[in-house]
Image 1 (cartoon, helix red, strand yellow):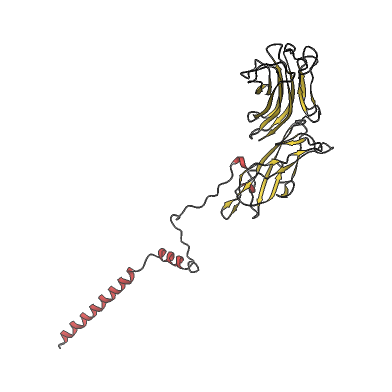
Image 2: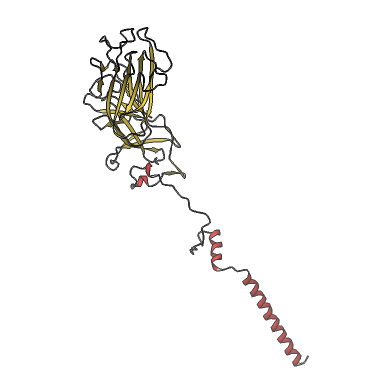
Length: 369
């Protein structure tokens, strides 16, 4: 082999080695990814090694949003306890349904002194008016263990805390007929709480007509009429021409036109769905087929507006026996359109002619859901 041939062979081998090196380097480079991707892979495989922070351009899923209570749910909207709904395992502690009630009470003679959301008389000789709360109607999405309650504007200074199994008493702080407002919060066995719940109850003195403390004013148009509280009733009686009260005469020509009424001023809250309840009996010789203001009737008026009327619609006129037509009064009147100082008037009317006596006896007046 000549020197020329040997030189050509050496050059060829060198070129081949260079090509092999280039091909190997290209193949290795082709398997590598940008630096950010390498870090992402390492982070997915081992969170201990992944110390290089990587900011994604877009989150893979939106963050979970915890809804705050509505403005009406929270009496102290700027306080931390109202800023969010407490969470247990991702779920808030909620009152699902039911309403807070008052414990219904009777006195030693069996007379009701608490009815619905209404208390009728002081609880003690010193004039203090106290009610007991009842939670039996409530249902939660977890077990309620503790109750906290406070008067408005006193959450920072005077919170009462009780086991839900305790007897919980609240004092009516007003001096006249009206309402008391408190806020109540329930705490679960895990320490989480509901949003504060508003609760309102009422004081309607002598609403059971057991005592007469001059809380009700009585009026009658006919001299000698006897409109008064007596024997557990509000008697809306009118005198007839013979000076008798009620059906003392069978003759239907002894009942002059007139009215008798019992009134009370009452402070009502704004908002809330409450109803005025009235129970009693209308005794009448008259018939009022269309239940109109033309003939005899019992009426409930609020601030001068007639909101309910009860009369003898179906039974014909009759003057004998002495006591004949009896019509049950069981009124349920919405109070949503009234607030502040309000006058409630219970009225018995004899109308149109001087015949056919009518009078009314009311057993009880109260406020409820």
